[in-house]
Length: 296
Figure 1 (cartoon, rainbow, N blue to C red):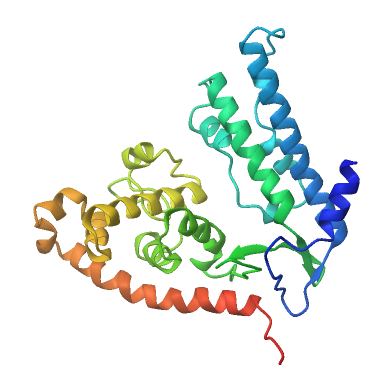
Figure 2 (spheres, rainbow, N blue to C red):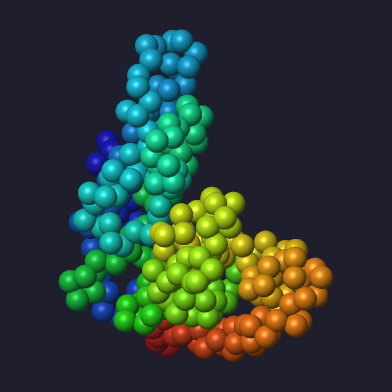
């Protein structure tokens, strides 16, 4: 029954969406089925583990070691032939990387299992794999359209386009703003470290990264953390100019107006908006190139 359902789903369009593909792109039914099977295995196993842990907590079954009931999302993804296409990092993986000696509580395991499980279920229902030139690609949702956005892997900043878009969708920040800050802060170098100790692409200080709950040495988490911090400043000060000032000089110096006398911050407030225009064009071009021209 499971194989029959996956077979049917592999041939179905995502519900309510009109599929757009690159001109030479072709849907790979076999790859799509294989990917959906992986996601279904994550969903089924995580739900089973969650049920087993809950029943053990109320004493209905014998206790099973917690480590055997954790989310299998990381395990499946690491072995997947599509792992290079995936941009997701589970909350469980983040927690383990932050401190491998800290044992997760039952409720942490349940939360991670459910989060990863239902994320996998959504992917199983909506994701399709296409191939172009023999290379598999995941169909992504951009502006409510399932398209494949091709980012220049040789570009120092746009090679992080996938991570930038993920952070943009999560925190509602224009991806061009995130890219502009990356160029201004680190030049797109994930290993950049300032004399003051700021780390990575968007130059997070260790204390700030800890407060944000991200690993600053992981590029994806660093971009997410920097975007979250910018979103907090934007919400606090109400304008992008002031949010940029707070990002560079610190919110305290914005509150007491000292940022007005810091030349680095003044340059920052001029440079980043200029770079935003550049990256708005690049993101638009990436999306446009992924959507075939419609013929009348």
